[in-house]
Image (tube, rainbow, N blue to C red; front, top):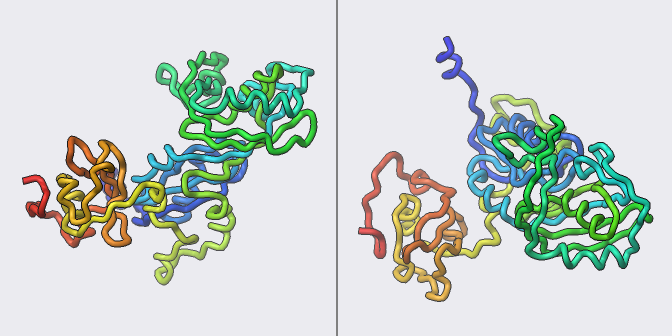
Length: 339
């Protein structure tokens, strides 16, 4: 009976591409992925960088092949705009938490700007205790909610720029930040306040850019799903919103032209001599580990890199079926391939 149920369970459709959601306040990033996966009847989906429930803005949602490019979005540069509320620290470092400490001191605009250079560049940042980091097999936020907040060590972080853009009143300051992977805006807001001799927390947080995706690409959940047609035989293949190509996430990675024969070699896990390619790589650019977008014409088949002097696949978007091959053992040896 159980086996029959498993065999009959609907697995969803194979659809590929990116959808850029303007995430609302309230739900988690995982909530949004699940809602859109259901709305698209998609077999596979994921997101490119968590936003807290009290954060809004650019949340890239990957479907199918696009999920293979999620790590490159996670590592990409991001931009945020946040409001720091001064004079009150909270357990969560945002307005959701309980008040921890109060301060009457209010820094001037010049005080705020003066502390920013020390918080910019390659820094060490202490994550919020209410975070998803694992401590002894448990999430930090689980320990904090149980009354046992963990002592989290500082972690390396890269903050490219911080700019004070608005000062609505003495109690609030608005900043725009560009940063790399793994930077906690809640921690940054906390640290700005502490550096100015006071306490504070984030009261508003919005992500405006994530890798190549920004608010120009973003749609609200209502725009995506509100007018979704009922599924019928006639429109079963229709999507409730258009998707961006899976390779859109890789546009910042330099392109490398390959022929169909060379692309087949890479897809099948073999390697090539960089100097023997039809469109040879310049010697100065054959740096070990440097990622390239392998392209046949205008189509990206995946990522490759040089390892031990050979060009090899790093992560492919296409498989052998792209070349019209099904369940075959490729044994061809175009020029420069492994023998």
